[in-house]
Length: 138
View 1 (tube, rainbow, N blue to C red):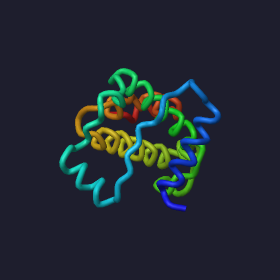
View 2 (cartoon, rainbow, N blue to C red):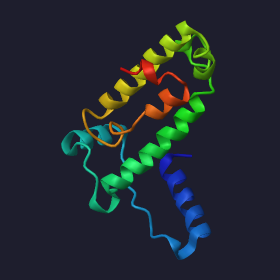
View 3 (cartoon, one colour):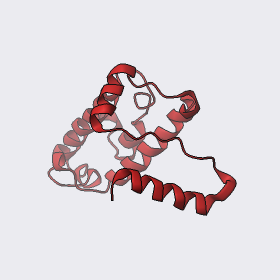
View 4 (cartoon, one colour):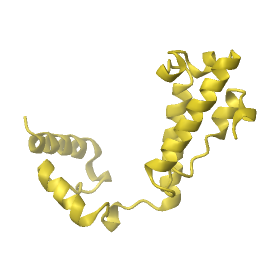
């Protein structure tokens, strides 16, 4: 089944389940080449009806990042020798590795959107405090 058929099937399922609660979706089907060409012409422009207010975008991204990183604190991280961050902070050398790892995450997040944007505004301080290494944050 191709993407157009899947999109139509998904639209029909949502319409059946939601009835009059939602309007018809805004859809546009294009090839990958068309999408790349369109992006080149229009950059990251979003139609006005799809734009999210900046404060709402920041709130949504903040919630998503917090959920993600709360889960990551209890998962093995290759950069930490496949220990979870909570396990790694139990030793002095592990605390140093976790501090480097957190700084890398913070820097990557800031650079993901340049110097601005909702992701760049996210405060990772809670992770440092929760892991007990806030004094290593410089």
